[in-house]
Length: 444
Image (cartoon, rainbow, N blue to C red; front, side, top):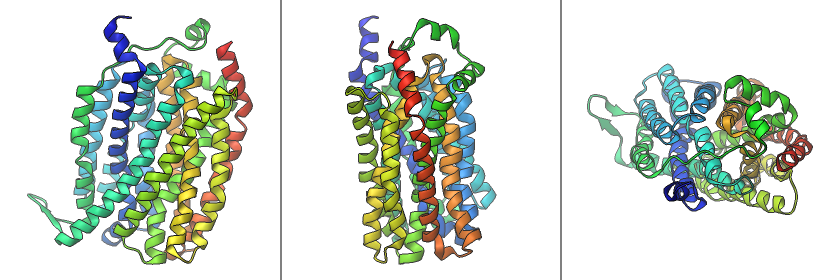
């Protein structure tokens, strides 16, 4: 390896790449999550139900995000990841602006689909980059920091969204040439999309493609699992119990977090009479601080446990994080004081975020490098269908079909979120033993 390659593949530069990826992740989540503050405005303007809103929050974005993540993961395993991520940032920025120009539910649904298509490149290609900058036993920390950018981005999205809403209301609206006056939710989408432009330029100019590492296990595994979709599927099938615990277990835990993120604003607006701007600041601060601490702390705790010989630390921290979040999630809708509800939201978010540091970091650790990004993309497929699409949708089903009352969204959260946390915790628990065995074989 020459001097330049060593500099570009070293962990010092790797942490710079982590920082750049995190900023891009924050920008992505602003475009992805800002819709949660706009629920009541979109419902009023487009005359849609909670279930239809949940499809915009989750299904429209997440399913198409997940479906294209697999072929994009395949591309990331064999092509320049810097260029791929740059194109993805440009694509989701344009799509997010189109969300603000939508005039009908169908147009908004399609634009949200395109946001998902653009953002689908960031995680698999980003994970693949990090795995080439960091040794396997030091990978949980950078992955947890990168993963934390999604929670950090959720907090920023809510706080920025709250500020934009208040500013637009104070300015008595915004108009664009050729499009005329914009509805409040349209203006918020467009303004929230603008940071994607400098983010794409910065990423392209400052990040370099590292040389790919060799397989962490054995030469036999490199020969056996050649690059290709069918080989990746076969590898998952041969390790089905382990990948079930990672894919499905962490996805159910993600569903709980997405359900909270999607419907907590509507809960505070409908139950406690808060404005969208007020809940944006409060919930945004909770996600910004508590979720970031949870996911980064989960990664650091996982690394510390692994250093003490706990090979199953990635899934252990995930299991306990989900279990510790449950009582607080149950208590939130029971609080009559909104500030008490916010204080209960904080530990629910903190503990609920723990699995997305160490738990997600298990994927690149157990994945052969020739299709590592594809296996991350498989995770995104499951996590987005079960998590981002399924979590908000499940809450909406309780609200629309069980209670048939928009004001009952708090009770819907109290039922749906603990169920999702319990299932996710049990599934990650089932993966402790196979993870220990897999990592023991890899180090033999």
